[in-house]
Length: 346
Ligand SMILES: Nc1ncnc2c1ncn2[C@@H]1O[C@H](COP(=O)(O)OP(=O)(O)OP(=O)(O)O)[C@@H](O)[C@H]1O
Ligand SMILES: [Mg+2]
Image 1: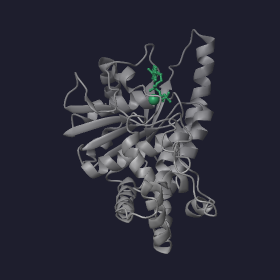
Image 2: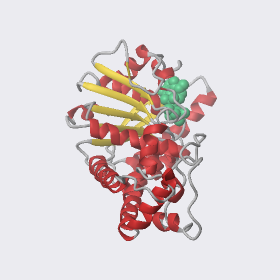
Image 3: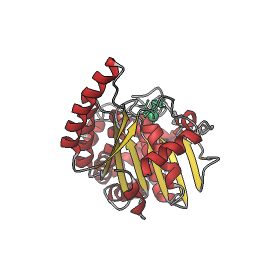
Image 4: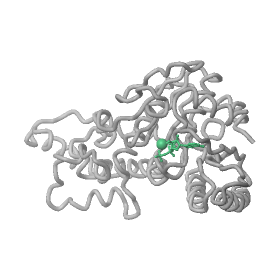
């Protein structure tokens, strides 16, 4: 079976390719976006993996943090490798929500799990006696997201708001990263909810702190739009949650290979996607080797693969499975990617 049925989803707007490290997420995202650019007016393929390989895959420079038109393909295809460091300025707005010192009181983890440390450094400390406020806001069960995921998510919000592309294909980072990214709508929604409650309860205290941290010495009144910023952000996040759970608009395609380890990780990925309400319809099984008579090693591997494929069908029978054979050459550059898109959509 192939991905043909994707082409029938005329309202498809967000397509995610995800899975274990090295299974073929980037080649699949690239080949699929080449085909979809023939059917949608303006398509963006964006890498949310901090270790980008989209440029290498297309053999075109897509780095630099701005979207770049991809050459030698039919239609309007753009590529973008997110540059978390360059984009930190716009992301800071999300992390501080317009409130000086907010990094020190509510978004720990933003800036702590990657090599990008901006956003936490230099943040004013909470005044004595209020240190526990951040924990109150976050709740005990919160897992703080990393800054790369937060930045990727802020980009998604931006894309949702701008409507600039008809379709955005996400080449995601290996599973763990991507699940943190996809947990952000829930996480931020409850975080901002708590912030808003706090603002209502401690409105004057927040105002005093703002003035203090903004260098006003506590005396001057500084204009405070943080409530407005938070409310707008909450609305955008709610919109993102609705769109990501809408099966006419969003689909997540897990990419896997025929090994039991990959199969188990794919199962966990699909379980989490179901929890987040993200639609899954197709699954790609990559790197299938052909049968062999002459090579004992290859014959043994093929035998194991056959068993794994049977289990794969039992586990993932409800999804449309598309298979990609292992080819002798590396899949890289437009010509190879076009051949792969033929396999995927034939
Ligand atoms: N079916 C295949 N036949 C031959 N080579 C393949 C095949 N699938 C993937 N490759 C090669 O394997 C490598 C990894 O593929 P790719 O970068 O798409 O994986 P990935 O899942 O995006 O990896 P990462 O987790 O590192 O982002 C690439 O060099 C690619 O060309
Ligand atoms: Mg990749």
